[in-house]
Length: 254
Image (cartoon, rainbow, N blue to C red; front, side, top):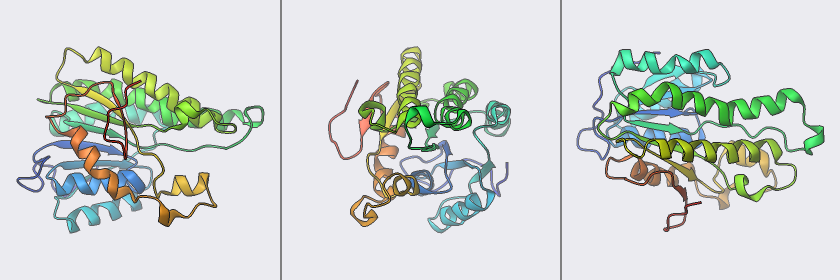
């Protein structure tokens, strides 16, 4: 874990001023856009990703946006012991966590179920589902120490479409939704709230891999989602166990 200034604070007067926010998969795409937006709104960002270089580039972008230096945590979500150690490490550093943005995920193979290799199945489930359970387990005590802990998990329409050849990804996201809604029910009597966000089609590397023939210029940029993440992370947001879909004004609850 590295940073130049571990004090919470960020940009004074922002909507997330003084909040400590952990963002997974923060080195690119939606995670990167959210991390920069949070820093601009005054949060101290704890950014995790597999690549140190990507995190350092994010930190440069955070500073350029006027935020304080981010806390950078190179982390492979398939390393269960390191994920489990995240909570105690953040407790020693900050004593609490105000926001969790569980964004990191992998697409995995797009293939008939009978052709998927054991290692690919395990990898997708480990990153998209099991790692999020580990994050809940290790970070729940820190979120409960916040005056208004907020958690947002990124899901996908694949969880409900169940399209051919999308097996591992669809199963992992369906499991994630069940996981988060179960946790939200357990949190009902606490000050912590947990919700799901389906970004829909967005201009990301994962989307390009899944739909290589699609024109990315026709899709919204990751930065366009940032306001919704901010809204769901504010203390004023009291929704719990709900599924939000980007681009829709109504709350979608299943």
